[in-house]
Length: 328
Image 1 (tube, rainbow, N blue to C red):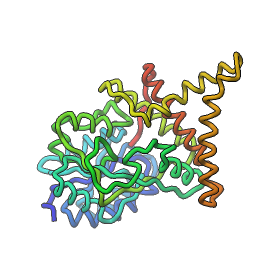
Image 2 (cartoon, rainbow, N blue to C red):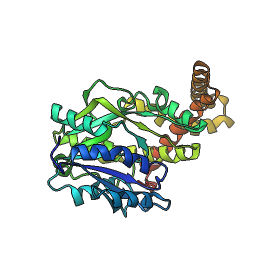
Image 3 (cartoon, helix red, strand yellow):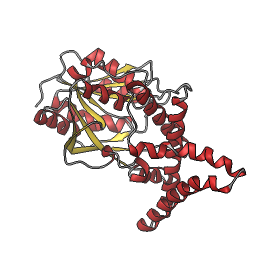
């Protein structure tokens, strides 16, 4: 067992009444096994989230609720480490909008100790319940939707440059200055860039993963990926890093759409846009036929929303348009 108070489990959240109770129910046994404190950082929920957490706090003094006035996830983690990080070895970051195996925290700590990694990241599988959410999940789990990003697929355990944040050694976290709170999105990739520059190592778990529940509407999916695009552009501008090929392809969607506006001059200008639309819709149709689930045809539409929003967000940020904040 890890020594008492050697770990803090931090959950940034905002309006998560549907998930927070069940999530705490799954994490509390692990926290007791590991001698870990659970810190819920709430960004000003207006639903029953705070009441649910307060009820748990009243029963379990190992769970604490703190306010996150800045609302965004990066600020929530920083504040939790500031308040509870002294004398603690590890930070485990938990997304309220996700699902986790019962031994998730145990496996992360085991791999950190076995590998000597300063950060343990995980791959994630996206799952949904309704038609739109299932289609979005299918798109996010595919190479069409994410370009083959490693943390979107399973891993046998390997050293990586970036992954979905799960565990970080607090000494390393503090040494590089924690999360940059000017990033409402993509703060994890920005942090990993500084972590590697400082000589720290990132290990992708081969023994556990998390499940993510995507937005249940196309409008919500659009807003999410608009923010992702903005965050990636901020990262490029701050660190002068060149986007990877899998990011360069969707980056061209908005320019392609603008090019299509020249159809009044000649129809040829619409060809790139039509090819992109055809690829996405064909992917959704093929997936629906293969799985015998007609609703999955929307996966192609979801991929189009993701691509367009990501591209739009990237270009707006690059051109200096103000970025909207993401709530925790």
